[in-house]
Image (cartoon, rainbow, N blue to C red; front, side):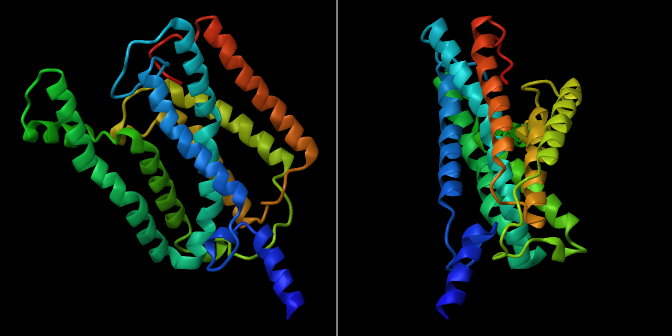
Length: 288
């Protein structure tokens, strides 16, 4: 009995689905990463409001040019690595959730947890914010006018990534509608980490797709629900990578050589942002 319990504990701790089964152990690293990303989601609009490059509903005058460029670099680093990691984790957890709840239960849960806050933002919070900002500017539009304009533009404000995640989740459910068995059950140990060729291939595909997508949807371009379509190559790629890793049990640690190569690439990208800011290349109103 003790041996089987120990084996079950090892299985839960090494499995992708560990946090999703009743009584299963949580994965502290995932919790810490998600908390860090949520903190970044809060920090980014604060930085933009204080002068960093980007768009937000409220902006102060930049404290100084050096401070504005420092904040721009911080926003850029968070934009490069933050939400991509969030979508990867979402992709990891999605197959397990669908396997546990079934397609109908999974869709219902996502509509409740993601759809309801999104609707509240669209029809209540954002119109109220627009009305308060109009009054602060000395304008006096009616509540009906503000609400009608919000329904026309469907501005999701800070919850745009929730809308994107909901769309990705529903797309996965539709994809697995005829074959829900492909979704990953919880409790199975990982067979290995991500292969280097998969990671390298994803980098190439995301880079090429980003260039092509931004020919049609440039940085900070408008879209329905403010879906940030110019960032979709990264988000779709990371979400799909998480789903693939979950379904193929490739959720173990990366090899040391792959960690080093990926780390050097990430460091080079992070160092390029301060250089761009110092050269003035990031001093635009287009965001990242």
